[in-house]
Image (cartoon, rainbow, N blue to C red):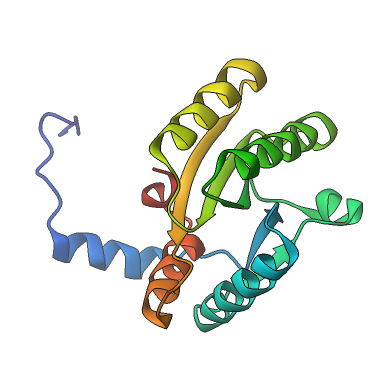
Length: 167
């Protein structure tokens, strides 16, 4: 009898990986649970562009603004839309803190509307880990002035339920 150990296993080729994905089926999100701290006008533009791109991927936005939305949420990740400045990061942190305390969510992914300063991202992650004990990752950036292609690429990544989406 042959035993399978990691050191004896041959690496999987790209063709084999593609075949496994086909065999196992695509695991995609049906809806993207989203909190937003963007100002009203920016939020409308953000939601319109991202919503259209997600729709093209067979996924929908699910605003988490009602308490019943939280009780129905079965996913581990909650996405947070924010601008790339300290004020927006502070508001997002307060919202995340409330979601942790009220709803027990432990994983959050940030979607920036515009490029964030590097210090904002590292500080947000560090403070969330230290004071809330939660995992925060950057899911992506939707440039303020963007083509449909940038939104489509981001939407494709957001809809996937794969380890790559969690980096």
